[in-house]
Image 1 (cartoon, rainbow, N blue to C red):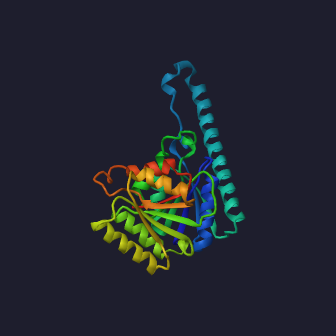
Image 2 (cartoon, rainbow, N blue to C red):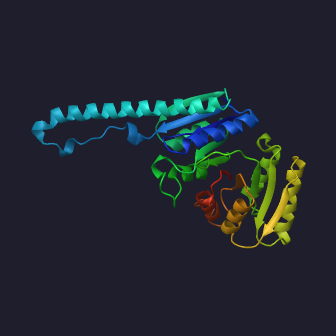
Length: 283
């Protein structure tokens, strides 16, 4: 499928939200959905414990270990198929018929890199299966994918809710302007309440860039309001999201800073951690 939407699912509590958000995007854009569940190498690899087995009992125990490895791999495949079947049912129940489901083994990042060139974006949960209760850190797969992705990454919150109010966090950087341009052009955002927020002082280059961003959004049919507030970006953004009932936050994956090539920008990481709404990231 070309121009598909890749929805990454696993056994976490975020998978249903990933599916529901993917269905919402597909319903507004007409994009086909490709559900993708990747079994890690640890789930399918054989273990080698022969070095710790006494010589006399080695043959029998190796046979038993081999049987256990085979059974473990079989169960991982069976569980994986159940995950993709359940996810496909959620998508179809939302009225989306153009959906496929793939179960793959290997490295998640490599698998996504192969699929991404023909996609319009990726939907992933804020945390993965191993991090459901690790509230203070993001899923490692999310960080890896955001660093490598060239298309927008839609980070689903724990629960889906209808999206009407969108806030674009604008810092004047290339990624932020890319986000503005995408919102202006994409049918996904047509008819939604769009706001543009920058943290700092509205003067000089920032003022000029904000005017350009607002003009771009208006050219795309959005009567977007612009707001500039002083303070710390993480705190200001969180307050506006909570105060104004924002449903979706759009921002650059990396801040306008010297360290953006090393890690996800600090503001981005904090917003993903603290926000109870989905976040769309652009590089």
